[in-house]
Length: 169
Ligand SMILES: [Zn+2]
Image (cartoon, rainbow, N blue to C red; front, side, top):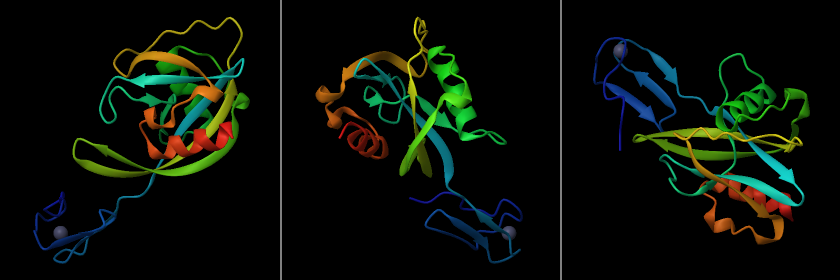
């Protein structure tokens, strides 16, 4: 598939978008890079179980996911973790309490446009007496799954499947 058929600067069709990464217009010389997007995912643990969300939107509707999302401009990855957990689950965890675990590249197809992301996976403890409130447009439900009982095939994204596998091993 192809997108960006025209140059956004001069409307020429004499363009190339190699690997959906480097866009070049051969008429006006415009060059645009679609760079890798930073994103986070958080492994939240409590009593030997990990908190998974069930996706309520495409891509990977109905599959297991970890809470998280794309980093906003001028945000640290730890701040992304804190903001996303607040938005998705109404969970209050301060940025200082996320421990970096590992990174994993991912493909994220959204409305026909393929994005390359770098998912930074963090670990956090579930705060005592926290009450979850789900962002229903994004999350159908949550599941606390024992580390020994996680079915990796139910996890939607390859990147997170690898990270969870490594984490529980
Ligand atoms: Zn142009």
